[in-house]
Length: 81
Image 1 (cartoon, rainbow, N blue to C red):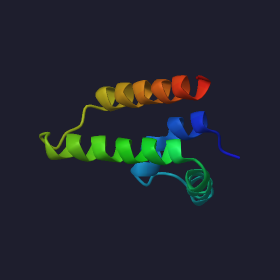
Image 2: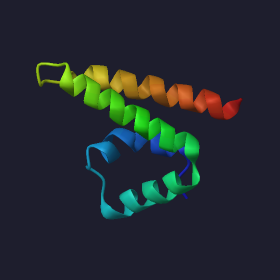
Image 3: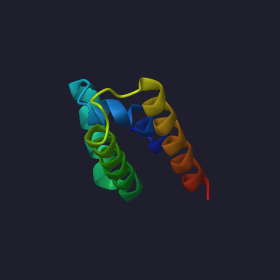
Image 4: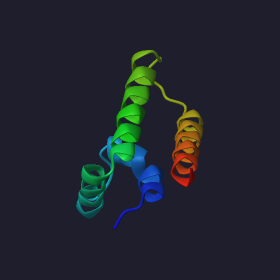
């Protein structure tokens, strides 16, 4: 079963529809059971949409990676508490 930290690592690929069928199914099953990850994915989607709407159309991959990393760390810290 997919764990929260695993989902955080592949969240951007999920949002960008870059996962295979098996991984998509695992993510969807996890999201059905985990409200924190549903919130995480929703916030990540909103952030991505906001960046796209207010950018020149070119995303800085390094910035996106850093944002993903910080969100994953925050989610991990929340799970530990």
